[in-house]
Image (cartoon, rainbow, N blue to C red; front, side, top):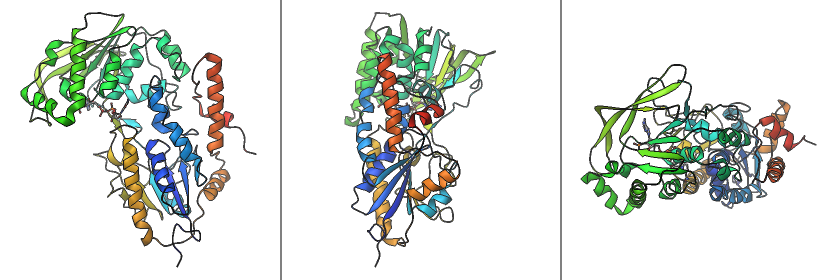
Length: 459
Ligand code: NAP
């Protein structure tokens, strides 16, 4: 009897998205011992998703994981099919004719909104756009941020908010040798931002920073981190939370915040970390000028402390506002989508999509579990989804499917120019060479045309 995943009937698998969850899903498939091919389909000509376009340029260590991903991509059964948007250049339905299984690892590329008046005034931005801009994402390279303003307010207290603060706070000399996009480096060189407010709606015990990232904020060359000591007085419930052995990060954050509160030294720039403030309204005429916050108190039991807005109001002048309140996934082609939770609904990674496509569909990463965790969190998540996939194989009909070669033919017949791994290697080389010329790790290409030109024409 022919078995799917044998030499007689190799498994044709597609993974959509080349960020961490996509690469880890590909790795788990390649390690399954089956006879198979794995195609990683990516919307952009370049791989690596948020490792290239999300991880801060001054965190090169975090980016070293691309070496692991490159080894996965170079496996003889693995291919990159870049510059190919599913839902744009090829549909899920068509993929079902080419592949037996499709793993969706499309991440969460959009930002969450605050839903308050004034949010759409010029000068109010999503952190997602700012991060994409300084990381040279082709969708964000054209954006403008008015860095002639002296005061910036960053709303949210997660690691993305810290990244935004650090990039605003660092001098160009501190950023010059990173892979930050050149347009961002040029714009930041004339930045007049001096005062940055980093705002949390809950208290210091609930801040979502990683201590390592928070510590960095206290060691910037030209920017001091400041906290009002009175904000660090904690309720009994918060003290209970901090004593929990699993709350090590929160306890270390608090220690760092106490150190920031003691520092008297004021540098040219200041980052003020403030708590218990919910943005209610953003005011301005032609652009943002001020934000009105409601002063919060915390209520509820330990480990479920919630912010409750009081009648007290706090106003801050603001020339720039960045909302950094989490990422959000978008509905994916024809697949079911839970709008309220911003996820593809699934059972153990398996997506119910009868009648949508002939392939079995699975999901992993942020579009499966929400925008949480660090890069490595995606490994276990992808392994779990691939285990579900493998457990379904005995119930699938072993019909032959063509896989990537047919997808490439289909794309070429429609005038598309899919990229492969050697194209990415050429783009990578051009970026590194441009970097050498300016004394930098790499100088990213930020326009799709330039990436495709660097990839060269197909022989
Ligand atoms: P996050 O960690 O979920 O933080 C979101 C912040 O926004 C929280 O402080 C949250 O407060 C606040 N918030 C949410 N809704 C709000 C609202 N309506 N009004 C005011 N504040 C609101 O999200 P993130 O910073 O975008 O990070 C996403 C993931 O990427 C995280 O897992 C993060 O650790 C990871 N990441 C890691 C690194 C790194 O390792 N260096 C760098 C960047 C990102 P509440 O707590 O009250 O909800």
